Length: 106
Image (cartoon, rainbow, N blue to C red):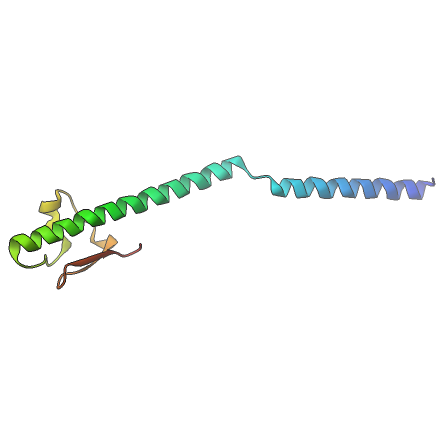
């Protein structure tokens, strides 16, 4: 085998090994990235669950206010006494005419 053929063979083998190495690196997942993604997903799910639970309690408070006063509260601040805590009006879309309340970003 000539030196030129040997060099080509070595280059070819090196290229094949490099391709396999690079392609296997792309397939591996970064455990730190996976952990971070899992934490973010878990946080988002728990936040959404909390907001949905709060929405249920706010609806109950709006209905209790309506039952006690014969009208729906004009603002969500009006039910804070019933709720026993502050209500963040930026999270909810509230229609005082009907008492309908929804999450702004479900």
